[in-house]
Image (cartoon, rainbow, N blue to C red; front, side, top):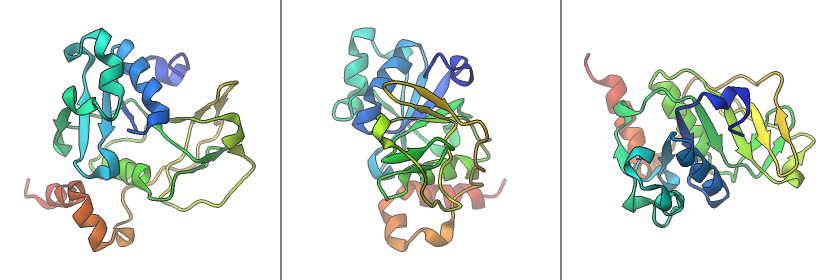
Length: 195
């Protein structure tokens, strides 16, 4: 993945917290990249794994979800930098860049948060098994599109990326979700704060 042209120059990336992407988080730290990791279910916003502050022998421990809190630094929304790339998890993908997650929509919301903060869209990759690359399935306007799919046997570059969402579709966010993800309330306050 990191040898791909769109990724070789990356300095700051977002990687989801799931176990299948732990190896990506380790490789990113080994390459000296700052790794921004959303907390599970966005319950506490985003954390930063900074390789400058983590001893190399501890990279695996820092990248593991259960021990990550010992090494991660919480990051306020207004302090999230423009990222260079994103790595997300998927249950299934198509060679044309469609992705299907586990159904809760957290990756889509995380991307929407960045867009609401004014960040420009960046390349989005995933790591999946070959059997997770399927023919087709329907997607919705808020779904996060892929630009790179890495399997154990190949890399699939999406030649024509699907349109990236402009932000969060607030009409899809329930009151319960707002309560469970305080970062969304923080985002609303930031967007409506006087400048």
